[in-house]
Image (cartoon, rainbow, N blue to C red; front, side, top):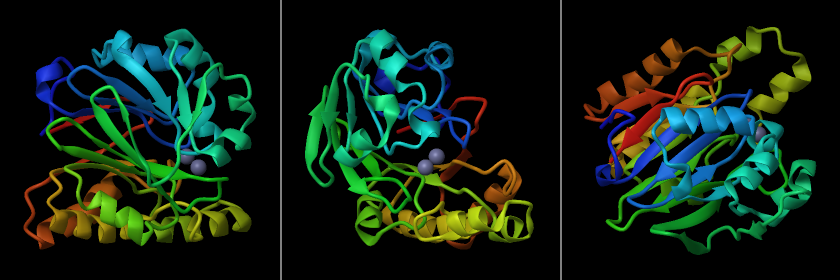
Amino acid sequence: MTSSPHSHADAGLRVAFLASGSRGNTLAVCSADDVVLVDAGLSARETRRRLAEAAIDESRIRAILLTHEHSDHVAGVRVLAKQLDVPVLATEGTINGSRHLAAVAVMERVRPDCDFTIGGLRIRAFRTSHDAMEPVGYVFEDARGVRFGLASDTGHVPAEALEVLESCTIVGLEANHDVGMLRTGSYPRFLKERILSRTGHLSNDDAASVLERLIAGGVSSVCALHLSEQNNSPQIVRRTLGCCVDRLGADIEVMIASQHTTVICSA
Ligand SMILES: [Zn+2]
Ligand SMILES: [Zn+2]
C-alpha cells in the first residue's frame, strides 16, 4: 500500500526511499515511535530537506546504519550524524574501509546474523555480495512482526539473504541494469565486468528471479533500487518486474526508487 507523506505513526511500518542510485543513497525506516536511517550518500543538508518533505520528525531518528563504505552510501554521514546527534552503526569491515567514518563521533559495530534492537525495531544484518570490505543488507521488524528487508549493491543475492528476504512484507531490491544495455553501452570494459560480476550490481533479470521468490513468500510491496542512469530505465524495470508479477498473478505493488524524489512504501 502506498501512503501519502503525511500519514503518521499509526500507519505502521513505513519506509521512505529518500534517494537511490550511484549519486547517493539514503532511506528511512519508520515505526510507531522510532526512525532509523540507512546510508547517508547525500549531503546532510539535502537529506534533511528530504526528511522534512516526507514529514519525518528528526527528533525520532535514533541511528544511521550503513550497508557498505562506497561513497554513494557514506559521503554525508559524518556531518549528518553530528547534526542529528545519533550513532552510526556498520560492520567492522565497513568502519575500517572509509575515511568518511574516521571522524564520526559515535561509531558502533554491527555483527552480521545477530539481532539487535533500536527503539521499537528489531534489526538484523545479513551478508551481501559486493566489492566492498564487509557489505550487508538489513531486515527490520516492527512490534507487530511486520518486516522490511533491504538488498542493494549486491552482484547476486546469496541464499541466506534470500531466506531472510522471503519473510518480508516490504522489500527494497536492487535492479541496477539491463544486461544488454550494459554490454553494448559506453562503459569501459573493466567497469562492465565489475558491474556484471558476482560482487557487482544486481541486474533486472536477477531482480525478477528474486521477486519470484519474494512473491512466493508473501511480499506485498517491492521497491526497485539503485537503477543505473546509463544502463537502465524505470520503464524497463517496470516491464521486467511487471512480467513476473503478471505471470504469477500476484497482487503486489512494485515501485521504483529515484535519485531525485522520495518514494514511500508502508504496511
Ligand atoms: Zn551504491
Ligand atoms: Zn556499492
